[in-house]
Image (cartoon, rainbow, N blue to C red; front, top):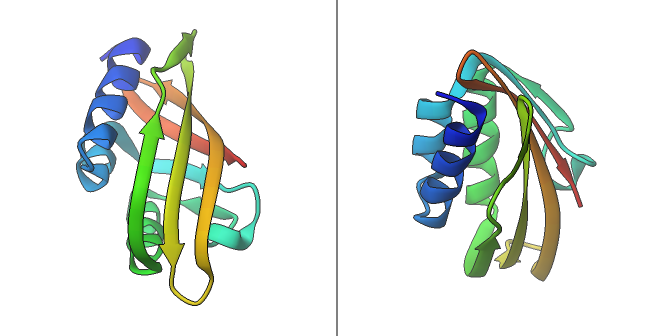
Length: 118
């Protein structure tokens, strides 16, 4: 898949709430995930299994999702970016609105890096 195809598929699946499917279908086994800080889990995670575990832990910490909005991707070379706005109630932390820029790097048709800025 091209970078644009990966980007569009990621947005399509995320809008459908299929984050697990995104990881399985679009991420490389050796992908890396970098958070802006440790508020949402470990700052740096390496490997698809670790990224899946981080996602499961994040979802377990959410009491209720109120809304989420994902932009169309902006593609440049082997990278793309989206914005993601989320309103959720987190266990033990209350309701929060989060806006982030998500940047992805694609190599050989798979996401090898995701990085979040919020």
